[in-house]
Structures are given as C-alpha cells and as structure tokens.
Length: 107
Length: 119
Image 1: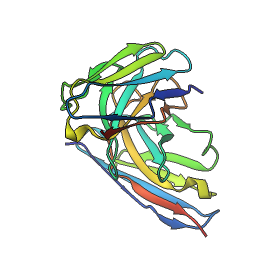
Image 2: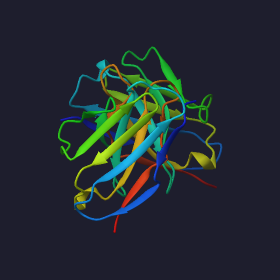
Image 3: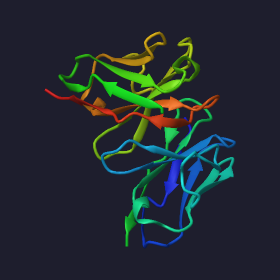
C-alpha cells in the first residue's frame, strides 16, 4: 500500500499569511494526487486534482505542485473561510489512500 | 448540478448488517466510477471501496474485504454498499464520492450518512 504522509499535522496562521502543506508518498505516484478541504461537520471538497489543476470554482489563492513522491498545497493569502482541515489523496493504485490531514487554525 | 444523497445509516449491533444507498443526479451516472469513503469520529478519511461505471470491476480496502459489497444500479442512478458482519470499528460517517473522468480522484461528495455499530 502507498502511505501518504502530510506535514505539519497542524499549523496556526493569521489572515493574509502564506501557508504551505506538504504531502509525501511512500512510492512514486506520478501526478495522481488530489487535495481536499474539510470543514467541521461537512463533506470534503476537492480543491486540486492531478497535483496542480484547480477544481472549477476554487479560488486562485489555492495552488498545488509536485510530482513523483513530493507534493505541496499552498494558500497564497489565507482567508477566514480557509480555516479547515486539508487532506491529500493518492489515486495511483489501490487501495486509494489519504494523508492524515493538516488542520489550519487561527493564530 | 451534481448531487449525491446518501441514506441507510443508523444504529446496528456488532455482527449485524446494513445497506447504504447513494442517489445521484446531475451527471451521466453510468459514465463515472463511484466510491465509498468513511470517516470515524474525530479521525481522518479512509477509502472503503470503488466501482467502475459499468459495474464490472470493484476494489476494496483490506479492512472491509469479504464483509462489504459495493454495487450500482445504473437504471436507477444509485450506488450501494452492503455491509455485513459489522464491527465496532466500522462506526463512521460514510460518504459516497464521484470519481473524475479517467481517474480515481473525487470531484464531488455527498453529505454523508452515519453508521454506528454498538451493542
């Protein structure tokens, strides 16, 4: 199974800050990676697919990069509505696996 | 507008069975793979099972293999998850999730249905 390791597990940031979340795969997954945002009590929402493609309707302050084993999600200027938990997911092979999540909290 | 509406969750005793449903609308259901993803209370996301658009091929997480069965009825635009021999650790919110075209990344999710396994 491919293990997905996210870091940090939590981050405290202020509105306007640049936030970067890292996701590392235990083996190469090409660009078969997605990022999701989840707010408490809500379903996850897709932000990024194919490592760097922005899902329709998602603000351009979100961006993704990477390929192979190392990936990043960047929020260029944190907004109040961005405080949430973020997950990466590999879609290279079964079983599909998620990272453990990164909680973005208000500083 | 894509909509996914899960139903069928509830309280069940260990060893019992439950069938979840996910009614889909707003897209050509038979053209897309579908999945079940669960989230235990206070925990992260865990993929459970996936099925291709035709229903001919399925995949499962090891934690549910042999106990859960995914299926779909393309004439009814509905996805199912039959859950047997339920364990305490199956307690979670179960989401259905639509896969993107030619990928197992999920572009739309339902609101989830809670399954509680407890005596």
